[in-house]
Length: 358
Image 1 (cartoon, rainbow, N blue to C red):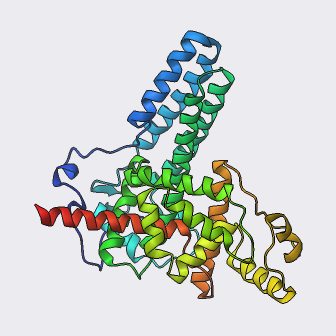
Image 2: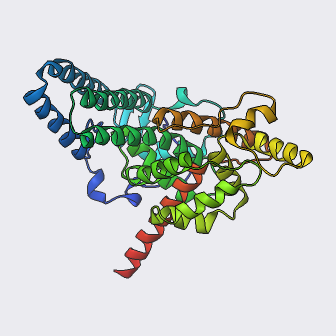
Image 3: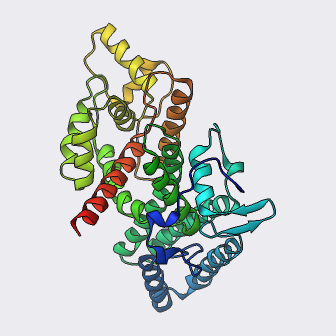
């Protein structure tokens, strides 16, 4: 996505960051391991050295593969610096404005910078690596805490993949202020450059807790009884989530997105099911009866597997995009879109208030 000139107002990326962060010595490149992850990996290596040395060779080989992959991607031009490409000069500011102004529909992979696409592949490889390390910890008979730590980091990487989709959705949302969209685009550039995002690192444990709470519920289809239970549980979770529920659940699109998230079926199927139950005079049914009443096989059960979460999210995401494009009834954003947008807006307000207080 190279841009040599733009018809839009140029905005200095320093507006969103300390000027010192974007000088000639700007830190670029993929974060192979966060500090926390590096400690976990080193701890596991030490324990394997002491008790399960036969696992060391594949362990070291897999980590070396990740390092080499990150090193290869680092050879591509940084997204945070002015770069002379074969097609012209690209700046972070121009890239941000291009993302905001794009009207393209469908899969935009071929319009994205090479580093963004390659970095996504790196993150998937890293995710699979940490999932393998979790299993390795179990096979080696190591402490359950070590195994759970790798599981949690694997889930956190899944939310990073998810957040890229959310950022791309929200950047095109013209109902948001231009400043909010520029902030989102800047966050996306940083995610592409480093494959790490502090915003999402803070948010992912919350969404994971909500996912686990949803799994424990047995919602009564037709009554939204499960929503009431989830709301009650919400106030025992993170403050940001409970504030989101209190402030946003009354909005129609958020409410419909919550129904899809909770019940695990589309808005269209939820509407159809409610009509069927009302016509038959049935108050509510369980998850195992949904397919029978809809006359088609529908997956409503959930697991703790991060892949299950992402798969169901991607279905809701694609459905929401289609409704928005066709301007038809139903949620035009996912619950994750709404929540991440809410958290970033709250963070922005806090930063503004802190600046005024100085």
